[in-house]
Image (cartoon, rainbow, N blue to C red; front, top):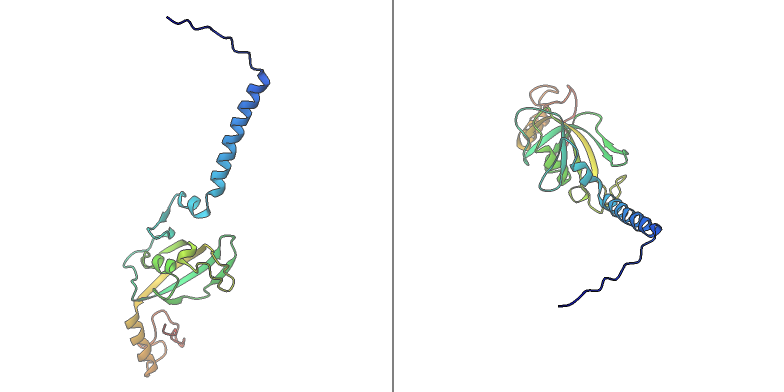
Length: 193
């Protein structure tokens, strides 16, 4: 049988214990700060109530629900919109209902339009990969997350819009049967895209 000789441990100074506890607390706080700092806007935004993230990474929020059908890739959407950067700077804003071919805009905007029924108002957060990427476009710096407030007023299949434009060019009366839907009497037809 072996005998264990008990060796007394020298008492630790209270100041060392306090320093150890303070060091552990500081390390935990530093780790938490790094975790928050590494968390980007879209990650935080995705946690907000009502924000939906699609498989592609587009984020949207229904501001006002619409009803009815939704546009497809072959449609031209009539929208009111405002585009902003994350710092709140407006880089584009429609002054009147504006026609856009659904596939004639950045991928994130196109994807968002196809989610909206007529009459809906949505807010989109478009990550750079679904917007302009690393490319600077006018007032939009490269790698910018774009924020759009969009109201889908109406949409038409592109073929129908082109037919209406041709009828107008061939003598349809302004504001009459040959005028584009949503145009004021005497207004020019939107340019085909």
